[in-house]
Length: 116
Image (spheres, rainbow, N blue to C red):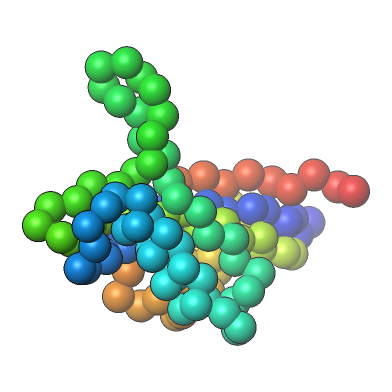
């Protein structure tokens, strides 16, 4: 039986010529959204989170050096009528990857969608 899944992919987005990390995060989300729209407007884009090793508090997945930032983004996509989790992962990576081919992507979460 075919199943519907939600797949979350993590991508590393580089932003150049920024002065503040907050600006880098905004630019990364905006640029990623523009790259996905209008053809892939069903892909959700948000900033990834990572935990502080000292206090375990979550913060935006971004770092900046010499005016260049690397921002971790999460791309979430629903994949319908697929045979397995692996199949959903492959479709998600293909769909997102063809819109942003220079961005490395890695699957970080896959879960079965609940029936409505």
